[in-house]
Amino acid sequence: VQLQASGGGLVQAGGSLRLSCAASGRTLTAYTMSWFRQAPGKEREFVAATTWSIGNTYYPDYADSVKGRFIISRDNSKNTVYLQLNSLKPEDTAVYYCAAKWRGDVRDKEYDFWGQGTQVTVSS
Image (cartoon, rainbow, N blue to C red; front, side, top):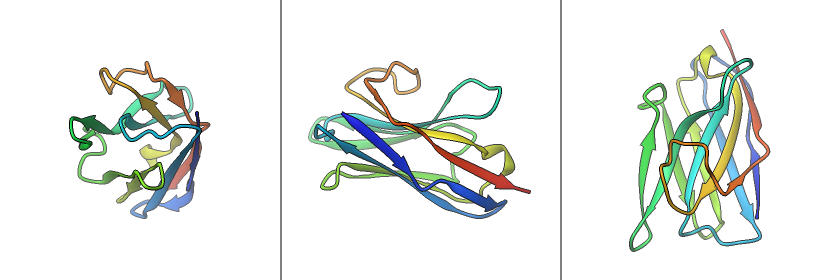
């Protein structure tokens, strides 16, 4: 399985970006899909997840630092997960990684597959 993240860039504070993560090699409909980020000198941290549940229903979950500003979504027909980043702040600057997990705590880093990351830089 390969996860290809894209959509990062340089944006001013208050601006928006939309990240995409396209999966190939396997259909990830029954997987939890998540986004993490890692800022320079800091540990990788959980950002958002779209958690699989019975009947292919999905539940969003967000870190407190992004709740109300970021929106995670997925399009199973495209095997793709998105992260809409709104009201961006300089402290959102980081490399953003997408990841897929079969089951388990969405906030830990024990994921089955990881993407390569896309840089988001927010200027003040």
